[in-house]
Image (cartoon, rainbow, N blue to C red; front, side, top):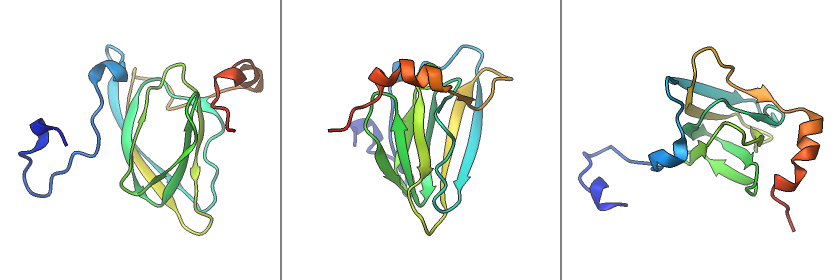
Length: 136
């Protein structure tokens, strides 16, 4: 933990920090707090992108999470999540558990009126295939 975070009051925990430059919050953006609840085995939304960055954490269960250019990983309850939004494709965000619900809460920064997510079509996925993490 950084020295700047050593004097937190009891019960306060910083889960993760992110440099502001990495976030790229659009000017005029609003903050939206979104809860995503996934039934057992729910694969989540098909490949999509978000209009702006989001920060959050898994509140329950396990989420299989994959962003363009990064290997898939399993986020467990208490793990933090960051997604830059914009042009980056979010490939997976499904429930990794077949027998229990999973949930995450995120705060997304986006221009008012923009959709929470936009699906990515098959043609674009094929054109960007080289940007997806290749597993050995």
